Image 1 (cartoon, protein in one colour):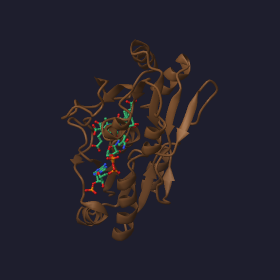
Image 2: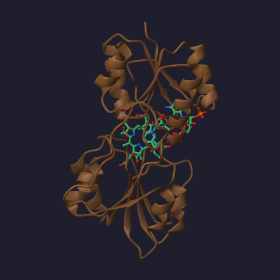
Image 3: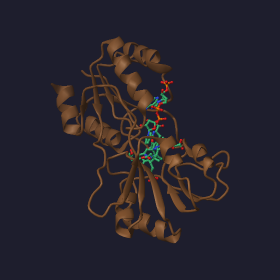
Image 4: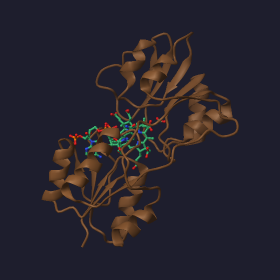
Length: 243
Ligand code: 3Y8
Ligand code: NAP
């Protein structure tokens, strides 16, 4: 009988563990513990770091994990590098479930930048109404450009106010809806959106809304990830596990 560990935090991970539960394949879903109330799941959940690649390798061995699936977010580069290394150390079969990056379409006004610092640098210039749809972890970097008015969308209320003198916080979690995102952008007279190239469907609504309203997008490319076996759909993961 397999004993699967899924590294989660994405819609794909949620859909994968639902499919595993439906197939009667024992699995545990792992969260970092980044938000106060992670989504309830139909499989046992573990929350918190492992203690680096070594800690994850020990977890794989101690819990006799037969398959490790990395279904984390494309910007979760550290856990993804650790997962490849840990699976190798522990001799555990490994597969990543990820989603292709978004690509600009007809009507999109994207400026692509390689990383968060480049996105900050691109905000040099006169005041704009900016929707920073990046979550909480990188807000401090944008304190470099306090001249803008920032609309922040966070999963949980921040413990300390962000270092942005002119900001408005919306507490909400995805998946989001294009009509609601368009209404939000119009209500705040947004003139620029800053987004990570997360891919997938959960965060895509803001891009559909931006295209509809003709709002430019500063799109942050994904961090580099190690070479690894990866698939884009859940059926391929199930085939791999039951092969
Ligand atoms: C803790 C666990 C599911 C998973 C849903 C997906 C979609 C909705 C859209 C915007 C963009 C952002 C952010 C976002 C989305 C999904 C997915 C996704 C983006 C939860 C969750 C956890 C997190 C962590 C959180 C980060 C933050 C990033 C908000 C659960 C809700 C901005 C990424 O406060 C914090 O510290 C939040 C941190 C990492 C990025 C950041 O830098 O702040 N996600 N998000 C996971 C853990 O503990 O291991 O409760 O569901 C999951 C989801 N958030 O099952 O339906 O699949 O990507 N998450 C980004 O894309 O830029 C919001 O606002 O438009
Ligand atoms: P990260 O920078 O790659 O990881 C930092 C550390 O957090 C890891 O070294 C590990 O700690 C711990 N960790 C991360 N994901 C974990 C998981 N699923 N289970 C157990 N420990 C985990 O990760 P991140 O960008 O902070 O993302 C954290 C979580 O949020 C992930 O589950 C990710 O899928 C989800 N998420 C992130 C984003 C994003 O924009 N980054 C967006 C949506 C969802 P140890 O070294 O102690 O093991």
